Image (cartoon, rainbow, N blue to C red; front, side, top):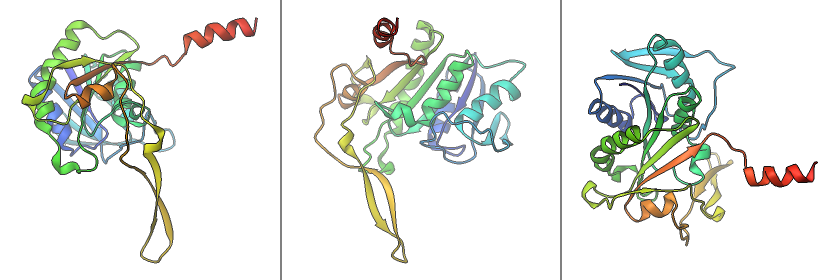
Length: 254
């Protein structure tokens, strides 16, 4: 099995190295093509007004001056065009990709692009306490459990037009309480706010931020699973069509 690894945290990210170790436990045919610098929050953006710069870091390791989407396209259509990957892993992201995060995430976007190109794709993220900081990430959780989850997903089969979103909970490996197959959750929109700041010259600027708040995750959601120390596996469809509304509107416009 040929595995391609990408991410949105950049070519030197700890989670990318972790993903490579996990991939090498599954296959000896592994390539890494990741952004030159961090691309968190770029979603499924594509570079069409700037050239793509490709730099070989070492054997089978390449950095692209572009987005995660650019990286997957460059890998599949250029670097590995003669023998495309059989599986794409995007991550392991530093932080969760749950609920509405999937709309913003470059990690998810890497898996989306792989799915669009007809390749089974899995996004991997390690949850941590946003307010405690990145120095407290339980990377060992993803490292211990990722290979088994990936093998089981591949064996089960990833349908065309579907990508798998896997989130590892914020706990030590031995504290994981199983795997939950979940649906995408939804947070309270009150948690996001604009933080007012001033620079050294007293000129105001603004920062999109998040704050703590009372919130109960919906049952069966990715948010509920990770809160219960379970690995969340969420199948996401590329088809955004809301079919019940489609049927209702078809009657309206007859």
